[in-house]
Structure formats: structure tokens, C-alpha cells
Length: 305
Image (cartoon, rainbow, N blue to C red; front, side, top):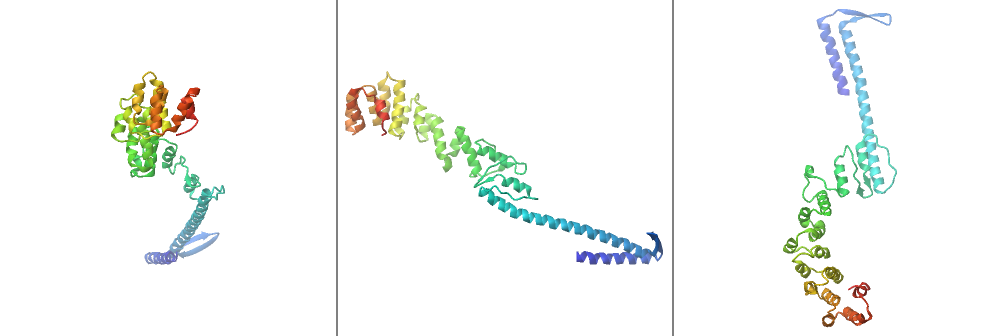
């Protein structure tokens, strides 16, 4: 402002001199009933000086507004920091924000250590994030995320939940999603693909492929709990009760369901022999109690292997 004042006064003097050099005439103005006669150069300087005063008032107003704005910004910063702290600490007290309203909208999405996206005009991307958190599949190509971006991984997880096999194959290389991807592939993929790629074989894998000509391979390559094998064996028994050889042959390499089926099909001598050879006391005990008409499945339900 000091430089502006000096330059302004120099300019006023120069304007006055130039005016005086061109004309030394005078002009009379009536102000409040008083006639005032001055050289035109003086009147010119007076009017320019008046403009200078008006500009000073204008600049003062602008400076005050800037000062007030900066003061509010500084106060908003402090209040925003405090509001974030309160949100994280689940404290409902929120300090007023005057200028940075958009950031206040964002803070409303914070709760504890989580961000809960909401539809917001300033942060439009939050709408897509909200959909992702709700389990929806979203087109994220516009964001140009890297393949290891957490939101890309979340979107891939949502696809797997919706049983997208191509997404499951893509997710095999992503450690956090690998198990979910394998479970989906084991459940939905073709038997040939499961066996060719050595996907883990779950109980559901076998139960979903009982009609396959390669179900025996699935059973032999699997590593399930005894009660899971018995559930599979019982399902096959109920489907093929009159074809014992077809069912029993599927479990030749799995001794527990094999003996279970022998008992179910009343091949008791062979069942007793194998139970004794493999020291499966559980079946031995049952075979001793069978004469008392205790059902095998009731006996099995009483305990776990």
C-alpha cells in the first residue's frame, strides 16, 4: 500500500503539471452555496486524488475480506482436525465449519476407523465405493487403478461372491482372494478343469459332481474329514442303494467310508475284517452292538472321527 500511495501521488502531480502546461485557465464551482475558483490543473489533481481515496477504501475492504477469509480458513482447519478426531473417537460433538463445507461433507463419512461412503456431489467417486462395500460389481476402468489396488481386489471379490468363474481364475494370483476363488472353482468348474489344474477338492466339489464319470478320481485326490466322506457315501448310498458294487468301488482308497458302505450294504464279515486290520475300533464297537438293532447312522451321529 505504501508503494501504491507514492506512485499515486507522483501520478497526481504529473497530471497536474501536464494540465497546467497545456492551460493555465481556471474554473469556478459552486459547492454548498460557495463559489470556489481554482486552476484547472488543481481541479484535475483534486478529482484524481478523490479517485485515489476511493481506491484506498476499495482496497481496504478487499483486504479486510481476505483477512476475514483467511481467518475463517485457519479456524476451519483447526475445527476440521478436531471433528476428524471426534469422528474417530465416536464423539458426536462437531464444531461449526464456515468455509470448507466440502471437507465437512467428507468427514460425515468417517466413523471410527472406517469410511462409510455416501452419495456426494463433491466426492462423486464415493458412490462407486459405496456400491463396492455393499457387494455390488462396479465398472472401475475410468479410475485407471493398478491391478493390486484394494478397490480392484474388492470388486473382484464381489464378482467371486456372485459366482463369476472368470473372476475366480483371475483372483488365483491374489493371495487374499485365492481361497475364495478356489472354493468357487471347486464348486462350479468342470471336473476336467478341476483335476487338470489340481484345484483343492471340497465336499461340495464331489457332491456337485456325483454324476460325473470321474467322480472316483475326485474322491481319491481329495483330502476330507471322515465325516465328510461318510456324508458323500451316504448320499451315494441313497441314490444307488441297489448297486452296491458301483458305490463301494468309488471308496476303495478311503477306508472309513468304504467300511461304512460295507455295513450299510450288510457286508458285515468284510467290514469287520477291515475294521480290525485298520484298528478302527469305532466300527468294531458298532458291529458288536449291531445285534441290538442300533442303526449305524444314529451311532455315528453320537460322536466324531
